Image (cartoon, rainbow, N blue to C red; front, side, top):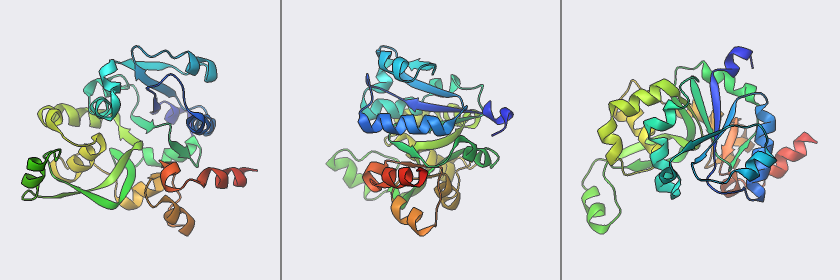
Length: 252
């Protein structure tokens, strides 16, 4: 990747606990080697003891946010939908979210073609696609109401390994602040829904492009058939648990 493009993208690894487990450490160590000279940042809470990360991965900077953003999945969703998160990376054109359960299959240079595409958000497609309403369904009454509401398809893309155009994403969140506050679903569903139904100026990659960047469900089938050759796979331990052994065998 050219020196110019090295300045265009920040790779972000969210961490919320004092150390990785064995598989997470293996994933992150492998991924950092493949990412090479790309800028990588830990994103974590204000009070986390980060001595493990400093010792195991010296030199990587920390970007800290209030602890409430790391209070389980609900807190993380709020972080990814907060203007505060993206404002700290405004010097980069793109943010690449790379969670510790991601396994990269290609080096950092493989990200470069996606930076020249016209899309503001690329993540693994949901295969099959999911269907949501714009209201929550946490209790029986809400579920009953949702039976009579329109259903919206969400296809692209899972946020675990995702590429987001910083300024366009920040602008989207500012424009739709009130809607963000009441959003009842996962943060990545928000972008998938907004880019397809509510704000067509926010460009979501099509499934065919997204699956060449990232996979989650059906990863084994698509990779083994040659239908997709993604940069990385999210949640591979769930969908393709022997992927690590396969890529290590190829690297020998």
